[in-house]
Amino acid sequence: MTLQIGAVAPDFEADTTEGRIRFHDWIGDSWALLFSHPKDFTPVCTTELGVLARLKPEFDKRGVKLMGLSVDPVDKHSKWSEDIKETQGFAPNYPMIGDTDLKVAKLYNMLPADASGDANSRTPNDNATVRNVFIIGPDKKIKLVLVYPMTTGRNFDEILRVIDSLQLTSKHRVSTPADWKQGEDVIIAGSVSDDEAKTIYPGGWKSPKPYIRIVPQPK
Image 1 (spheres, one colour):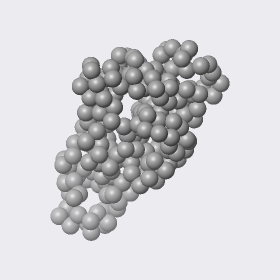
Image 2: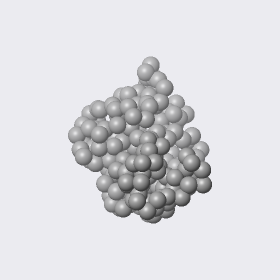
Image 3: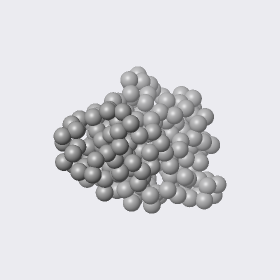
Image 4: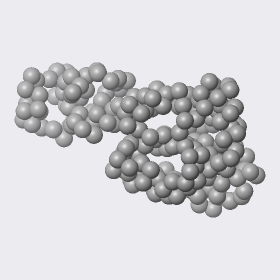
């Protein structure tokens, strides 16, 4: 089963392209994005790693650390990085885990516990389910899980949009509607009574239905 939203993200130690890390210590007081790939030198993942490198300044602005994972050794990641730079214009500027023993993939339920075999002998299809995105908060709890097939590249602009929503709603008692973007109106959370809402929003709110209370995005 996929790890559930609200569960503590499993901690682990691993070798990465930027040295050995303990995951929770590496996150510190930041937010984190952990994203996984079934194999190095695969076409869709090559484009994803390049796009994420290009967008890293946007994640930095939001206090989000990036960590990649592939079921291949770290030295192979470094060679793949050269191809990514050549074909996408940006090389990975964030650490990539070398998960050769499948430990992290199993820990995060991306592979079954009985999965085995040397990483070099496993094909992308063997690791097809290692295509997840986990957004993790400073409290080390999972805030979002996305799972993609190998044939569909991830939309990192959407992931940034979700992070904006997660960070806003962690500070204010609001929810964001469908297709919401930074700066647009939000919805008062259902846990806030009308009496409370009058104190928080003395200017009132728009209410097309009693259960929908629309206000400007809090500052």
